[in-house]
Image 1: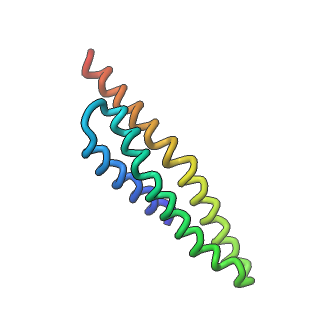
Image 2: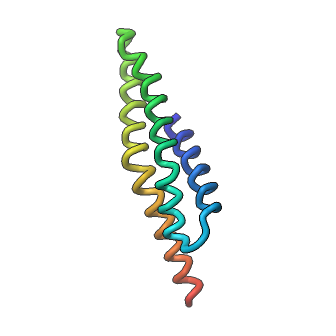
Image 3: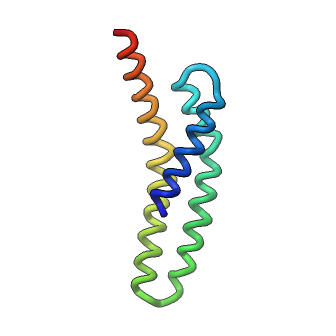
Length: 101
C-alpha cells in the first residue's frame, strides 16, 4: 500500500512536471509544491482507515495498523517531499553535465 501511494505520487509529480515550462529543476520543485497536498490528504485518509483497526484488540491487526501508519508518516513527510524532488534535480544536473561534455 505504501509503495502504491509512492507510485501514485510519482505519476502525479511527472504529470505536473510535464505541464510546467522552463528550468527543469525549478519545474520539479513547482510540481512537488502543487501536488503535495493531494498526497498528504491521501496518506491521512489511508492512515485513518488503518487507525480504525487499533481498537479491535487483535494484536496482529494493531501491529499492522501501526506499521502502515508509521510507514505513511515517513513516506508522506520525508521520502516524497524531500527525496524524490532532490533525486530528480540531481539526475537533471547529471544529465546537463553529460550533455556539456
